[in-house]
Image 1 (tube, rainbow, N blue to C red):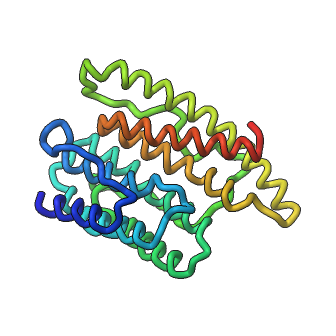
Image 2 (image 1 turned 90 degrees about the vertical axis):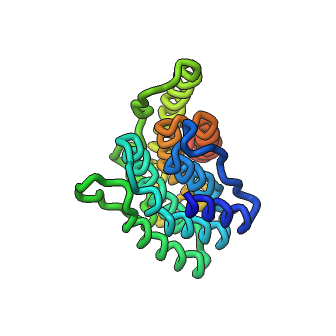
Length: 247
């Protein structure tokens, strides 16, 4: 736990704009959950607000990932797989959005570290991850789950909150899928004309996978306030995309 405390202290001191999540390991919230929650706070930022310091904090959290690979539960592995996909989606989004050579170089370093992430697989072959920006395809399903994950051991006092969040996730995913498909169709038309979606719209579309992954991971960790936070961000991005491409 000394390493976990050191990582949180580094994050606090580096820059105040991203505040680590609160929780007490061993009291309903495990160390892995805290790690995922803190990392989700970094990944959830708007691309236009990301700085080199933010990427540095991301790098620090990845460097300390090995401290959270002991005695993992099946829920930890599931949440870590979602976090791994969210990390890759974050890099894809930033690669599409950023034109800063230094930042893009740092993103390449992060891609290598993510690929070596040790806590998501139980003796199996890791799934391939893409880090280069990919324009929305036309004839494919959206790259995020349309239904929330199965969550076990929800406390009786939290069941109503959890049920509300399940319904909100499903409704948000349906709206986001519609906006994603409209963006894909618009992108195809623009590509035929030698153009493409503007950077802000493309970034908003690419964040759907990231944010739904973070929301699902927070559900598995029983961190309901974070689920709400990530779904609110999805709703904002969906509204932004729908304003450009329609529903």
